[in-house]
Length: 177
Image (cartoon, rainbow, N blue to C red; front, side):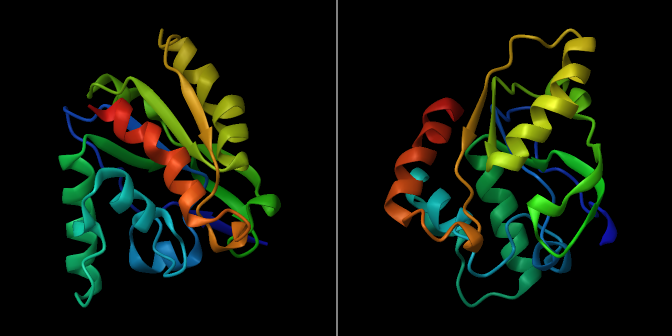
């Protein structure tokens, strides 16, 4: 068990319309300094298919340019990216091992944007969002923000085929318009 701090900022701007939340960045994502950084995580291929825009895949570029391409992609498509957890105790990338989770403060991000829908990537992110974030949002008067739980794109969820993930994640593109 290791205590981990999130380590990087959310991606959003005033035009963001949807917020995609994971649980906590994996060790590979923390190493890269950006969301869904494990090379076998299917988040970016799914997003490329959902938006018919492969600029987030940017093959053959260094890590820093890939991060910038993915930031531009997210903002161009009005997608904000963050995670539910600001810090926690965790074993590797195992969501099941998460303990002592402290949430990120979503209120300021939501108030500074046009976020109208939250999507969580995986069961643990959804559980923690409901437990840790929804009460804080309600305290701030944000009570009409729908949340949709999507399947994890993690390599640990290998049973979910890419085509199924693309189908399920297509609601992000519809909501971001």
